[in-house]
Length: 195
Image (cartoon, rainbow, N blue to C red):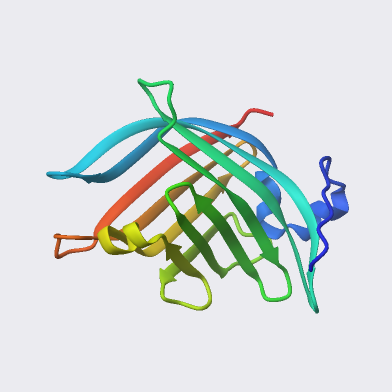
């Protein structure tokens, strides 16, 4: 089992170990979200607000590999409703030796995604991806979704705007039963640090 050490108030030395993720520590909120999701007769556009929280963790030791990262959660609400329509929990991780940035998360629909990509430690833009059936950076779905709305690919691009803002663009590609083409379920938002 790997050792995880929490660091609620990150020491400057820990910030150096987080690579491109260091700027994300804290709580972020945004009201500019746009979700394009599948609907019975095509697609549905929802404008949403979102809150993301990132708390530093590390080191996480896997034999000779050492990771640092962020424990993360997000909740999103349609602008006109109080009930959330999306939640996630997981980790964003940085492997400095391999220059790998990762996002490992669970969606309460029964989907697990481990996405990753190569990045420089001081990058302000980075990209992560995962694909169903892959042993590295893959996607798993529950049996119902695997048959009816399987996530076949996931892509995420993050842009950090100095000093208190970041944005993301996400493309969750779905193979929906009865539809010949892959549906691109997209989300994007710009968030500002609230603490």
